[in-house]
Length: 460
Image (tube, rainbow, N blue to C red; front, top):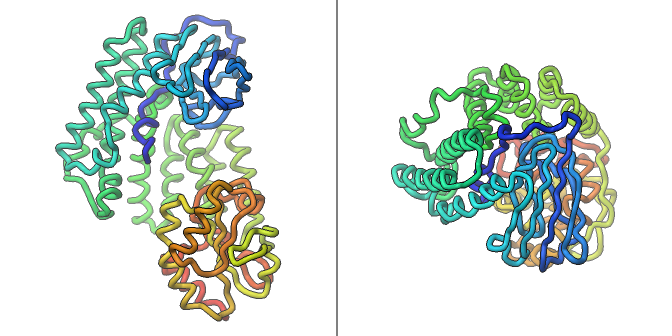
């Protein structure tokens, strides 16, 4: 939540490139980071959001690496520091800063240094103009719009003053700033509802008029603007909700159905993949979901990734033998393995102390545990907290009077059990029968009436 405005404030720029040899598909990044204990820095692709490299930092803080380039905008992350980088093919960029005061010591030299300095300065300008995000989204409509217009004006002012920035870059970036403004405007209703605790909140009829008549198939804008991508995806999501209600189909199926109609393969492929890479692990319609994706995606690498996930998820179908965990720490003492629990139905809650939605389910879970106490079912809560939060886990069990069997996974998100169930987000709930077979690898939440219906169908 805190990083929302920063995440949508940066762009992938396609123009302003000098002529380079066609066979050059790399960029060189080097530099020095003083006063850091970090052994590595991580490079992320800002378009795909994927990590592309771990860069070794020497004892004296120096580093150098050659990166294969597929887009233009990346991010270097070292400890808590993050630096946005413009790295077209053929770039040679040097980065230097003091890790304890990165913003005031950052030096960028070499290829496209003016653009890289602008991107770095933009982070600070946006952060300052934004202020406290919660306070901003709690404003009424008029004050909120005034506030984000000030952010937009501050960003435009920075761009106009930036020196040595090519004119075509400025034109692309001006559009991007406007898209980011519209994207934040689009987020007002859900975030205002979240912070005000009024989930039924809706904006006035004309609040989003500025979003009307936007061309949703502009490949150039889609590639360089995160804000534009958010607008396109949100527009499809709104229409998908209407289609789901009209045709009585699941929202994820409706979203894929509408995305499949996008004419641009570049836009369509990214939207399909962004939905499928995590969505396939949640869908209640696995075969239909996968077929829709596979029949419409033309990106071979994306297809391989989703096909691999699909095949793994098929192994988690109802009636399949459940993956197992072994010797997880039991808060009551000793350790517990899945095989120790055979003979009863098991309702597993995968959670963590830092997870707000997980904690929100606790009252409903406690109610179920009380209602079904003494029956042929066990309620198992498995924390995937990191080791550093072990004591926080134990304290929360006491403070919230958690019942059932409380276990601590052996390696948080990287626990074999978590990976075999392809858990990409929490809370996640799993139902297993007395023989150790899967009833539902993505069971309803305790607060969902469908869970009660399911439990009532068992002979407990």
